[in-house]
Amino acid sequence: MGLGTVAGLALSFSLNRLIARWIESGTHDPIMVLAASGLLILVAALACMVLARRALSIDPMVALRCE
Image 1 (cartoon, rainbow, N blue to C red):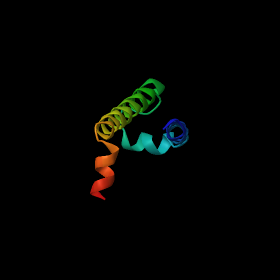
Image 2: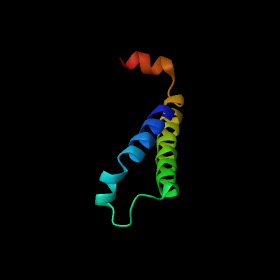
Image 3: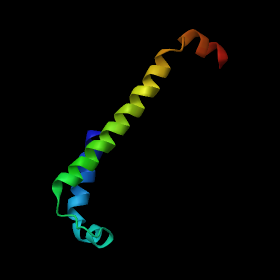
Image 4: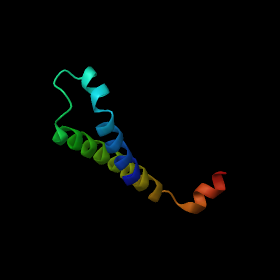
């Protein structure tokens, strides 16, 4: 997840001019880019936690018997 975030930030800063055409307010605000990245990290971590809690609640022997 960290490598993807670093790659995404690098690409977003390098493609700044292309993104500026799509966004009217401009993309020269690094705080907004970091805030969007932080939000994506938070959502990804929450999704991982929900799935991990669900997986922990299943007995491995029951899961193996079902297969």
